Amino acid sequence: MKLRKFGQVSLAIVLSLSSSLLITACSNTSAIDFVFVTNSKSVPGKILVYKADTHTGALIQIAEPTYDSGGTNPVAEVVSPNYENLYVVNRDSNDIVHFSIANGGQLTPQDTVKTPGLFPMGVAVSPSGNFLYVTDTCISGTTDILTCPGALVVYPLSATGAIGPAVANLQVGIAPIGVSALANGVAVYVVSKGGDTQLGRVYAFNAKTDGTLAPIGTGFVSAGVAPNAVVTDPTSRFLYTTDGAANQLIGYSISSSGALTPMINGPFKTDLLPNGVTMDPRGYYIYVTNYNAATVSAYAIDTASGSPSQVAGSGVTKTGPAPTCVVVEPALGRYVYVSSFTDNTVSAFQLNPHDGSLITVQNQPFPGGGQPTCVASVPHGNHAIQAVGP
Image 1 (cartoon, rainbow, N blue to C red):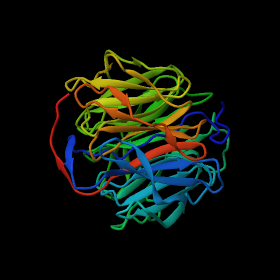
Image 2 (cartoon, rainbow, N blue to C red; image 1 turned 120 degrees about the horizontal axis):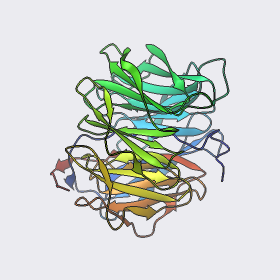
Image 3 (cartoon, rainbow, N blue to C red; image 1 turned 90 degrees about the horizontal axis):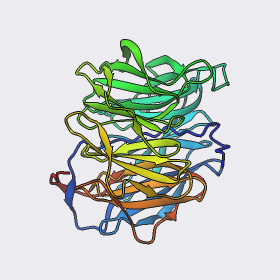
Image 4 (cartoon, rainbow, N blue to C red; image 1 turned 180 degrees about the vertical axis):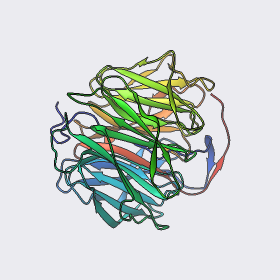
């Protein structure tokens, strides 16, 4: 099924990753995390809120389960590093809506900004929580996503998470679709999908303390045919992007300056039309959604080189049809959730911390509303941290 409402198949998948190790103990509560699922079918769009059960990974909607996204066609979302704020990208209404997150997972809209261009798709927050990064597919005055240049817009964030006026607006190739902020704060990366006159690229910028950005080296590296999602690891050493046109995962090593070097044994094979990517909070495993295959692929990361290798045995796991977004919950790093666009569900899996394989959670999939596009999660309660090796 064609994603009529997206204007293109790929989604900008972003996730605020915890830098902690695997968490193995938590407070006396049955909810380890809250999970937020954006829905694109209604106008305005919707956000569904669930609590994730500690023992089973099952999703249960909270008492006030549904909120308006504040705009049309929400396609991406990200949480702040302190887990107190949620930012939702509404592609068709060209706006970003800021919600505060209550202790019980409830959302309260706080402020909204219109992006200067058209069709925002990607969003990330700096590790300091001081800046919000948003990609506009096209700059103002253009509409053809196959030829128009796009932009990366930088907004300052207040101590309460409020979005201020933009401090930077940089042109970044054709159809910039995903953005990731390095965990150490040194750099920001933008995936440009390309179009009629340009193949895929990853743009690299040094992040300054005032929110402005400076290109690193030549400014970009090649990234296959049509990259569509990006993630960086918690150690700030590796970057990965999915190439939906070539069915591959492309890896890069990151230098101390933020410069990118392609991994020598890549790219790495995926299933059909990869369009979402994330890592577990420890940075040991990568998970990729494959839209046309209705699967999620699991990869173990070589901690020295960063090279991913598909997990043996259950390296490819079935999801609902047309999977879009994937997240590993940050409280335990033990459950994986995938939104499926065409059957309106969320698939749930238990992550084996020793090998990265996935086991289907009982009674899944869970209802995901109307045309779910993305998934984000925040931890609930206090948690003790203990490392578990792969």
